[in-house]
Length: 314
Image: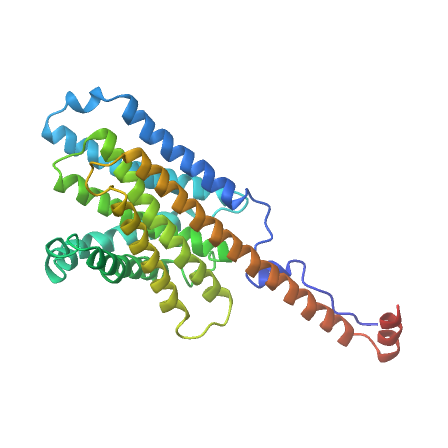
């Protein structure tokens, strides 16, 4: 009697995530705590900036601009420690996102759209500009970096990898925006500046995670042609809303309570990541269910008719 059996790992073969790994949300909590510690260090040591000249402040600000992205990458990479993605691919996507953002930042935002001349003056221009200009450009960069560097690579072998790689690209965009902030301000005030670095990073990483979910789905499922553009649009909308909410709370003016802005950024990032985790888990469960149904159908087809009936009666 010839019986066809299910694959050893149907979830893996269809894009689900059967690996034993740390909880996605637990990893996010550790990331947020690491960023909070980063901010606390520079707020508890206020005398550092007073001993530096302008060049020193700029140099220190550039280093600070990198730290939040490095912390996110480390924690996200540890989340995948059961079978981690190659470091060269994660770093490659991060660098691709950063290089694209650096190449496009001044031509697009400084000249083509000239955002400083109109974006901050009305709430509607800030919301629309933050979504349709800043958000769309940032998410298009994230999409391009993942698509070119890793999307067709065999190492991209589960849905959660879409989030990992998209967040890496988003962190590249956030790093360049942090660099721009440091250069525009001739360095940073270490306490408020460190908070600004973290809220910037939280915003781009969270929006990129949403796009990463769409990329993971498109990698393993047959999706309509508008699916990935819709993911870019959702990521752009989240980017615009995130920075609009923070700005309305006083983050942009640096005159409000920066700790309130930091806590608000943490809350928005956690809600976003929880929603993404739920979507990935639901998709993986659906894939496992379909795999089992298909496997059971194959098994019955492999049985002779009389055996199939007997098995069915039981």
